[in-house]
Length: 428
Image (cartoon, one colour):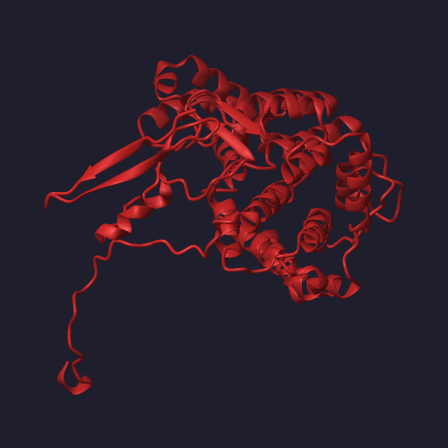
């Protein structure tokens, strides 16, 4: 164990300060810069690219090695051997459940899948063509107006109930958002189904006929949920923690996370992949497109990652899932899929892309899978939000339980005007 290590900062005026070096169980060491304030200085780190904003024991990423662990478990193992609610229990409680714990947890989650009847009426206040994420931000945030019996954030019992409610009700709200947008009647939950089966039932069933889940497609969506359940301190998770640091209720915090996820630079990447493929138009034009990418004429979507400098570990799982779904639905000759395959092959053998480590990421494949499942592109980020809810809740709960919790208050490097005196309007 590394102990009592410091980094010494020397100032031009001769002053110095020793800053402790801290180590986690895995990953880079960090320098504790909290003492800099005694020198009247702060660090400057736009977008927090080199700043650890918190300590956490939930998710670990090694971008150079291409690793993603939930509570120490490799994402590939969880995607292959686990199911989504088991992963939810793991993220929330820190350990995989035993059989009894899993059964009890699943029962509690499914118990809360219905939403208040008056909440369902909220949808009539939105235009039918409203973007589904706009609806999600509003309706999820409104949950605090209906379930205010569990808003004491200092109560572990209240936090548990709120976590269960969010995990249960966000899929219901997401499916209602889809039904409202398409003009079909809401399909309320059926707790005889599993979590993912129930979501697909609410999305795709109609009152006119019975719905029988296709287990291969259910498993595909389950993997998407598992792969997107958490991803360390990304923009939306940091937003949830930032909002939560003020003591805001968990429903408001998750709503803020949904708003951050809505940004095209965060949650809209898989939708951008499909748009790119549609603009390419045909597999015969892929080579010219990739030449245009190298000439900076076009932007290549779904390749590379800000964190992963190696292959995105989630992409390996999603690639196999993509093949399984398209084979099940007899869509192997789908034009978009054929274009995607050609893009993938060029990127993996062309030195230009290899040198820049532009490997296919999870978004490259997930958009194709979601489209094959019958989910329209404007719902892709909503699916992401359903999956990420457990990550947001787990991170929020960890933050609230942290003895070092304070309201977040980033500093700034001010570059505006210096002091000046007010000039009356007549003299300007």
